[in-house]
Length: 467
Ligand code: NAP
Image (cartoon, rainbow, N blue to C red):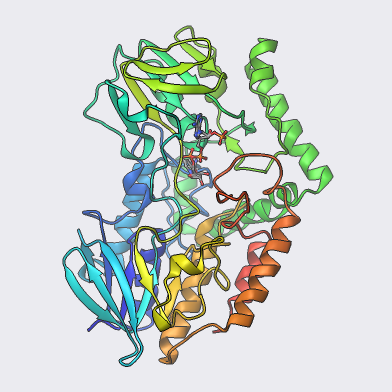
């Protein structure tokens, strides 16, 4: 019987596994439903996929890399990094790919989790969910979606077998994923319609390749890497954080940078107006892109801002027009607020996690829920960020969970602590722009923000410093 079962082998699951090994805890298994590790960096293989946090920071503090090819590396390089980490820290032997967890039930007498997977049953003292927030695709809620007769796919399930050359293509959505792949496919397709429901705030992407000298410095002088990491981190905790917290000066500066970027790249005032957001900057993720706006000015690209009323067999339709296309690409994001679905997690007294979360997911420090002993969530409710690297949060959580596992006791958070935490988080979110008038995946069906941590990330590390 493994002492610990980790569900998911993305950034968080791998980090958990590495930290357990480093604490000399070997009785754990990582179940991964896909055929290999990597999480979002395995799933999102669309052209141009990459991270908008520089990899010097978007990487583990204990496995810094000196030879990132550029400031913002692409998906394949980040995925390679995760594979390197799994190899270097000996995680492979603990990994069971192709194993989907369907359900887990707490056995009160034996004080263990009884786990049902696609490959049989298992038992563990501790259950760690590392499934993250962005693993299940969201499709647009428009009538007729399934009637489309051409090829349709989601950005995170890219059909590389479908050649886009010379096709007429519609892309739904203009979020972080779409702004990355739209520029990459525009030159290949015959015609591209980009359907935008809300304009986003976009700032320039200060990307560049690291040359030989930088690589040598990072390799030979490790403190140089740490200094770069620290500088990126501090920028997130100051300028970006203040903008998200609604600090007027910081917001004005960020808005000014975005407006200048738009004005520099889009000459046509009518197009510029359609690309100007109508909500406060930071309400949803601020996008970084050097090539999204210029792509929209290409002759074969058209930005469509009228709402899609229906998808017909030939393509999207708005109130005034039909758009016959060969290919439909959904850049419509993920079911982020449906934490841990579709798994069935049943705690003490037969209570179902999804019933507890009927009015919105929550967890003490994003990790623990009353009546679910020895269940820990990584990148759980209230721990996503709008201003810095999620890897920092994950490392804080993993350190906390390892301490809990080491103390060997059954851990269950008290209801009062959980409620106090939930109320504090709601009050904290109220002090940010996340809840302002915009649609975003931070919000559940009732419009409440359940995904995000609204304060500085070091406050989270401080709060999780002790088990
Ligand atoms: P997203 O941020 O949820 O964006 C979805 C897009 O689809 C939005 O533009 C949304 O419009 C639009 N949409 C949804 N339903 C629609 C409909 N019925 N008609 C028209 N448009 C519709 O999803 P995402 O771009 O995949 O990004 C999700 C998250 O993944 C990001 O926030 C980020 O955390 C992560 N990510 C990061 C990177 C990166 O690091 N660069 C890249 C990709 C993804 P509205 O804005 O009006 O809702």
